[in-house]
Image (tube, rainbow over all chains, first blue to last red; front, top):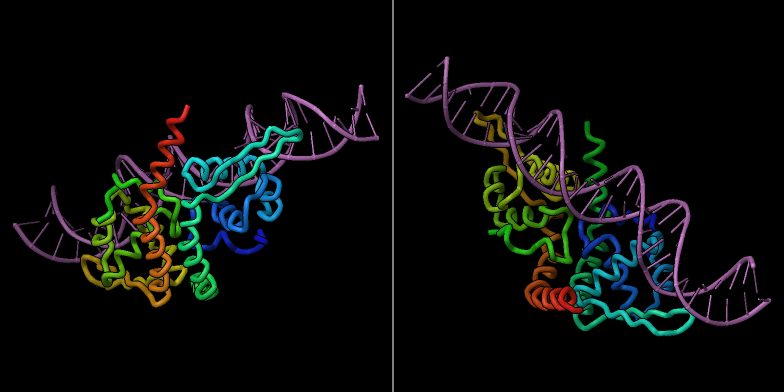
Length: 114
Length: 114
DNA sequence: GTAGCTAGATACCTTTTGGAAAGTGACCAA
DNA sequence: TTGGTCACTTTCCAAAAGGTATCTAGCTAC
């Protein structure tokens, strides 16, 4: 879903920390378990995914529901507040679709000037 | 214009690095000199403002025009590409106006739970 | 009794980012 | 000769972000 080869590090726009936007986009499709997020969000380590989810939970963006089962099961779900982030994320994605390549060209021209 | 007491560090949305969005908003009002940016963007040090402007220039967002005068004069201006960033920035500002306080309340509730 | 499953925790390390403080160079005005 | 203006640059440093690798608990299945 999110290719680490995609030059997202070059993106001038960031929602929260490095992975928050990807988590929110994933969770928009419905509640997800920890391991169900780890797969599509390629390259995220468990430590950092936990950090990201905790921060989003703290800010009221996601809820965390742990089921007392064996093996344990935990589900993460977007809140109403979390869903409000979708508008700015959509605007940022639209910007990237329209202007990202122009930005990369400008950067290359700058780097290759004498 | 931008109060450092504003809890912008809590903002989940960032355009580029810490100061880029403020520079772009300032430059939207017209070309500005280095010292004219340093004043409204309170708290930015000359070193970091230079870094920010260089990065924006590299990405084709601003142009830098140096006049061979004494004392030197340098003007920064938004490019067409730079102006395209205004849509996502506006979306992020709208989000903040509508939901930022709710986020802070959720955060406080999280921190004060037992 | 050994291995596996889940959802992490922990220790440690590197990279990136941002900041403080001082210096620079060219000229001009007093 | 001293100080001022402007747009930086340089050096040093601290904090934050993110990564690797390993460990944990509790139960089940073999």
